[in-house]
Image (cartoon, protein in one colour):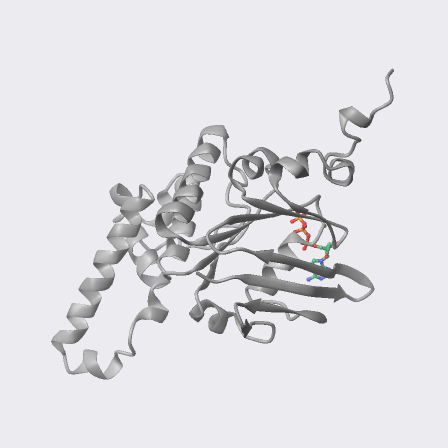
Length: 261
Ligand SMILES: Nc1ncnc2c1ncn2[C@@H]1O[C@H](COP(=O)(O)OP(=O)(O)OP(=O)(O)O)[C@@H](O)[C@H]1O
């Protein structure tokens, strides 16, 4: 179980400050949501955590290990997997092959061994396929294992993306808007899946999300960004009552502070 610490991170694009000295701590075994209005800096934050962007200032740590200058594949090898806002699974490959691709970095270099047809290679391959089937089962994708990803309904493709990230055996999962474009039923199912990932697999989840209802329902803690600044960090219940959040995110004052008509 590892703690992720974001310490005074700033990112600038020219004159625009996308993240302004943002700090928060993701406790192990929690679902930690990062929310905010359009352009608040959520995706930029996820890109810093996964090594796609290097911040102009500040640092990111996984326990005592500094991640700030590491490249994405190195961060992935340390056990941080991510999904994307737009689905990035390979449409032509089957569900099973997409999940095997997710395990690629766990497999030993095999060129020479394959060339000599070593039995250890076949054993390792079987072990990975068994694990892939367990993950598919966990996410309700077993019946789709042989289907090309492109033929799956949208909700299942989003789930496949999460499954592929889980196939990397992460300790921390970064989810970029996992329910974007989903209907109510699909959103509820995905919310349950995320809670099971935390509770049954013990994987810590950082969730960037627009859907306030989902965040309130499943997050243990919420960090709210607005114009690149952190304006709130606390429980979902406290967030709902926080005037700065209501003002920034929902575009109005909380009803308890409104003047009577
Ligand atoms: N590569 C980039 N180059 C220039 N500006 C960028 C870049 N990426 C993001 N920005 C700007 O930085 C700010 C934060 O963007 P970001 O995408 O992180 O916000 P967001 O909270 O994820 O928004 P959304 O909810 O719309 O996805 C925005 O003003 C955006 O236009």
